[in-house]
Image 1 (tube, rainbow, N blue to C red):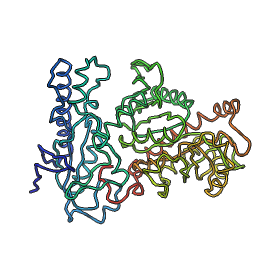
Image 2 (tube, one colour; image 1 turned 135 degrees about the vertical axis):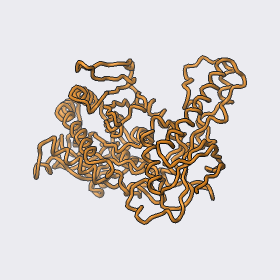
Image 3 (cartoon, one colour; image 1 turned 180 degrees about the horizontal axis):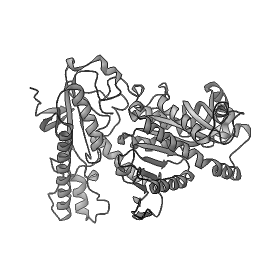
Image 4 (spheres, rainbow, N blue to C red; image 1 turned 90 degrees about the vertical axis):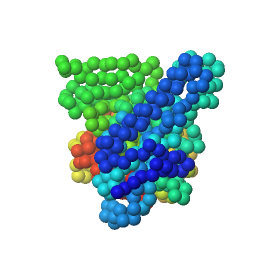
Length: 497
C-alpha cells in the first residue's frame, strides 16, 4: 500500500493535511476545498482589519493547495517518449502549488487524470505553507483605510514576493535542492495569480472569459470586424454563447433571437483590449489587440501562458522585402529572425524557433478556402518564408545598414511582433503560428502613407481576419491533441501541459 508522508518538502515549504486520491474528480474537489478555505480565512482577516482589529493578520492556514505524485524507477517506460505531456522521465517526487481550482477545473482534472491513468498510483493533495498574497484574494485598492490600518496591512499581511515569482522552470534554469520535489507544472500558484491579475489589468476583461484559441493583432481595425463576426455567429446558432468586450460587457442572444448587452462599457480602452467569443467548452476565440512592438508582445504572452491555451496565432501587417511581392499578399512564417532583443535573457538567440506543422497546414488551408486561390495562383499570393522582427519602428531610416541581414537571413518580410510571439510560444510550450499581410514595401519605394494605408485596410482587413478564424476552426475540428508537439518540450519536463 502506498503511503505518503505528512511532511513533504517543496524547497523549504512543508506540505501538511495530505490525502491520497485515485480519482481525479475527488482530487480536484479537495483542491477546491483547500483553496476556498484559505481564501475565506484571508478574506475574514481582512474584514477584521477593516473593523478595527489591531491584531488582524494573514492567517497561517491561508496557503495554496498542493498536488504531488511519487514516481519509482519501475514506473518509467520507454513508450513515454511518444507523449507530449502527462508523463515524467525520471523517478522522484513531483509537486506544485495550485490556484483558482474553480477556474482551472477542467485543466487540473485532465492533467491529474493522465498521471493516475499512466502510473496507476494515487495523487496526493495537501495544504502547502506557501502563503496566498492578500491582493490575489481581496481587492483592497478602493478601501478607505486610515494610516494605522495601512501600516498594519503592509506589515501583517502577505503580499506578492518577487523572490518567489520567476520563470526558472519555464526557462530550464530551475535547479531543485537535493531530496526536494521536482516541478510538476511550469508555474507555481503565485506565478499564475500574478499573471491573472496582469491579464485583467491589460485586457480590461476578467481571466474567466479567456478562451483556448487566441488571436493576436497589432491593429485595432480588426476588432470591428471581429465584433461583427461574433454577433453574426451568436445569431446563427448555439456554437457560441456570448461575446465579452472590455469592461466585461456581455453580449448574448435572447429567446426572440435578438442580441442583448449587459454591463457597463469602459470610458477608455485598456492598453491591450481583449474580446472573447465564448463557447461552453472554453474552445472559443479570444482576440487581443496587443498594439505595436515586441515589448507588448512579450508582456501579454508572458501572462497568457498561465492559461495554458491550445494555441495563439498572430495576424498582423508587415513590410515586404522582395520586389515580386505586392500589397495585400500573405506571408506564412516558417522561420524567424529575432532582432527584437526582449527575450534574449529568457530564450538565447541560438535556440531555433521551429514551425508547428499542424498550425502551418491549417493556416495554408484557410488561405486557400477563404481566397478561393489554388495551385500556382496560391503561390503568387501566399509566400512561405522567414520573418525578420525588429524593435525599431523607424527601421526604414537605417535600412541600408540592415539590408545585408535581410539578404543573409533570406527574410521575406519584416514586422515588430511575430518572432517575439512565436519565441514565447516555444518558451511556454504553447503552439504558435503567424500569418501576416503585406501593407508596404519601404525598401522598394512603397512606403505606408495615409491614403495608401486606408485603401489597403479597407480591402484586406476582413479577409485576413476571416482566414485566421477559419484556421482556428480547422485546428479545432482536426483535434487539439496533435497540436501539443513534443518539439515544444525539453527533457526533464514537468508532467502538466
